Length: 360
Ligand SMILES: [Fe+2]
Image (cartoon, rainbow, N blue to C red; front, side, top):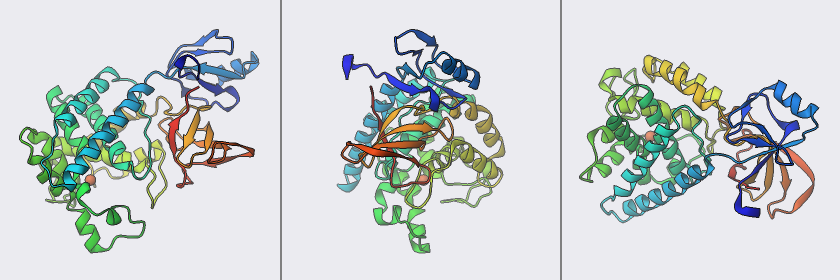
């Protein structure tokens, strides 16, 4: 790669109306075309085509942050896992610093997409999910008007909300078949396991601990571990539970396909007054939908490396917050070109995921 630039190419023919790109765009000869975050309407796309511009180029704005967050989160979760395994006291100072930088990110990018290149392998699920839920919960809490200190504490709890799952056997956590009732009872222990573990640390604020303990409580009182109803559930846990479900829905798991951002939002709306507080649901829809659907995470035309080792190009997005686009597979798993590229919809194929964007 020359001069280290992370310039990405977008093939105009494959652009989906409504897409936005996080950097200024240029033509092949480096003439400026449109500023960052322009919404590429069908009119603009037609104009580009009429001018004979087949490819446009841009440098994504915040991919570096996203990669750094993902890597840091991985380190943190690995050391937490190690601490749990050896029954050591948790060292959460690094985690607290990390959440502070996530909070900075949320503050600086308030009205823009949460540009996270999330790697959604099954094994990576815990740490990518925890970053996403942390960012979503802090964004939502801050839009809800909560004071900054509380927002950060909620973020810490949200980042650690599923830490108790490190104490649940993997065979149960990743089981494809329906869980037996005994297995489900074990899974239901994770909020308490997580709470007890994190509470061993001296300096974790109660608001963060509450998120961990109560993130599976429901509005109707049918959640766990306590069966609390609506107002009795701390605000941070009520916010985090919505973000947790949202991120879980948009992620493929061994037993289900990924929902699009839109499907996930609709599904959350259905649970209003059942699982979730109706006011918070309407706030989530009002405040978060425009953010979650504003900018594509992996724009059309991007080359991506799949978890299988294959290289593919993004052809179409299901929604702008989509991490499971429709892609054209260009190489085999050894990255050798194949003679007949073929198209795969990643929402329907759980054997393939986007591992990372290939910079040009
Ligand atoms: Fe959980």
